[in-house]
Image 1 (cartoon, rainbow, N blue to C red):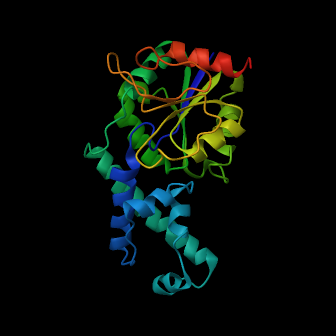
Image 2: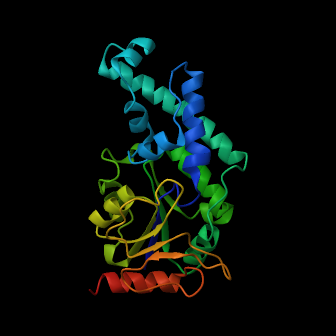
Length: 258
């Protein structure tokens, strides 16, 4: 039976600009750190898989001294606690309705589940954040049927393929029957390294990413009567209206017969 696997941020909802970025900045401010990321700054940070890893990328000896960290272990623990606070701030923004699901997400998840497909989310974001976004974007009925793989469930984060390999192993899926929906270059690299057909729906910070290997690149999944913009279609398969399970099935077949 086919499987549909989603990244979370930028795919289920366009969460980075209106969710994660302000949550990071609020957490920095609460902690008294002299860090404020602009949108341009964050456009570079999203190329790093994992929130704790993004925080760690700005740490310097001066910041270590500010937080009183004298060892790598102390720094890692402090970053972990800061990230937990950032996650709480982010999930509150989801609960406040500030991060609506992207076009077509609710529809295609419901359609896939009704057709008997396995549906999963594979993300390097914190599990609490992923579950909050998924519930809001997919609705309670679908949410309960979707498998979630998130956070530190694997050590090596995207662009490493580990999280997708774990999904395949744990759910006993055949890569030749799976399709991934991603929004970033590192996500495409991870999915393709795991041997998975990949569709891209570009998001606020990823329009200029390298999507080499993706079978189809779209503005979004579309809605009936409101088709997505096709940005690239290497396999020559494009939705006639919104992206459907029929389109995804054709993409999987094309990718694994050429």
